[in-house]
Length: 156
Image 1 (cartoon, rainbow, N blue to C red):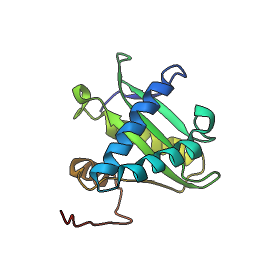
Image 2 (cartoon, rainbow, N blue to C red):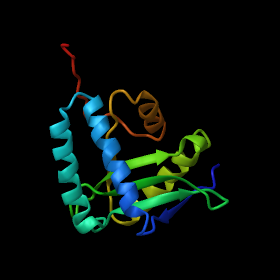
Image 3 (tube, rainbow, N blue to C red):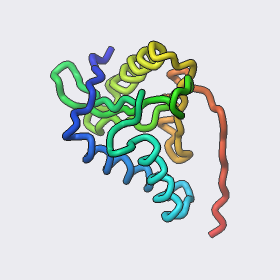
Image 4 (cartoon, rainbow, N blue to C red):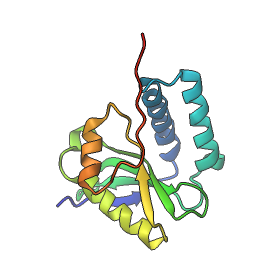
C-alpha cells in the first residue's frame, strides 16, 4: 500500500499549479471537441466559481500528494460541486509520470473519500474525458460508476 499523504498545497505554489491545471483543462476540452473560445469561457467560469480571488472556495481542498520521503508526487483538488452541497466533486487529480503505477492515486482517493464523508458529502463525482480510457478504468476499480455519457462524431 502506498504511503501517500494529503498535504494542503502551500499558498506560494497554488498560483502556478492553478495556471497549469487550468491550461490542461482547456486543452482537454479542446481535444474533446470544444471550440477554444468556449473552453476558455468554461475555464473562467470555473475560476470565478471555485477560486474567487485566487483562493479555493469554502470547503474545497487542494492537496499535494507526498510519499513516505516527503516528495511531492502529484496533486488532488476536491470539494462541493455547489456551495453547501453534499454532492462533492474531484475537480483535478494527477500523479507525476515518474510516480505512477505505485498506488499513490488509489491511496489519495481513499483518503479524500474519508475527508468528504466527514464533511457530510453523500457522493463524490468526477469527469473523465473520453480519450482517457486508462483513468476511467482506474476510477471504475475504485467503485465509480458512469452517471452520464456524451458521445461525439467528428465530421471533418
